[in-house]
Length: 319
Ligand SMILES: Nc1nc2c(ncn2[C@@H]2O[C@H](COP(=O)(O)OP(=O)(O)OP(=O)(O)O)[C@@H](O)[C@H]2O)c(=O)[nH]1
Ligand SMILES: [Mg+2]
Image 1: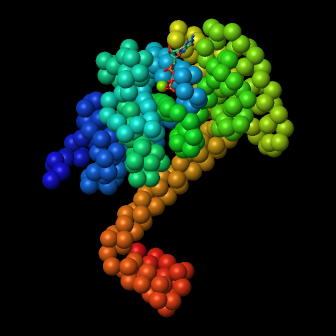
Image 2: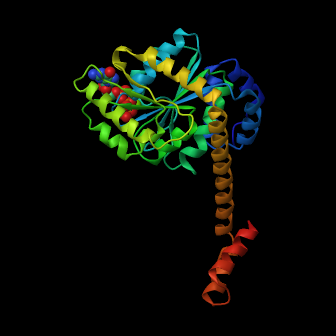
């Protein structure tokens, strides 16, 4: 028996910024609770305000350190900040990952900072399903900015980028990142590039390489174009972080002026709806597998009474 939940009360307490209510709501959406529908309906009228900023880059490049420094900068401006640390390889959810907890501990006691890590391995529909719902919780809880950090590389990273208004791609000198970035198609997804660990040798070279590659890509694009800035930071000392926040602001203004923000958010809603619909279909399909309909159809296909396409059509119709 699931614990009884007063969704309206939870949502109103989350809107007041009560951390426990925020955490509880995220757990509800993440665990695919029976209250999920009610939660989503109660949250939606209070969403649409938060700016969503994605941070991505190779392992160890400094994403968590940069996130922590960004929190500090945004807090100076009096903004409320949410953080989602996504780990596609981990089955553990809940608090923050150990490393993140260490790096973000300066903010752990701040009532206007919500930090949450999410595991996506084994989730039905993976990242694309649970993360937007957690985002809605933080948005409704009055976060001015939600920072999404991905751990690792691959498709999940691209999925996260699809959620963000602004995507920051981090690189570091001497990691062979420049070339790697081009290969991974990361040049196209970055709205702002940050060369972190600028206290190390080779930062200027990484900047130059990046500039060169971006300029090559640009020649093929027509029409209004956002010029992706390349910034240098030493996140460990919070150096250059003000410029990163300023770049996020400029990008936001540019997108608003060019209708790009609306377009990105519409695309985001499209994938969200699609993910929910596909999950629902899968679950109904699961029911079919458990039932006798599929077995009956298979029997007829084996008996050469029915071709498999017609059988699949019949199955789909029964969903
Ligand atoms: N020298 C130097 N080290 C840094 C800087 N920023 C972060 N680091 C260090 O780099 C290491 C990795 O930093 P994280 O912030 O955990 O990197 P990450 O990208 O979040 O790593 P994953 O989440 O494991 O992919 C830590 O030891 C940091 O202290 C920097 O500007 N300069
Ligand atoms: Mg990290």
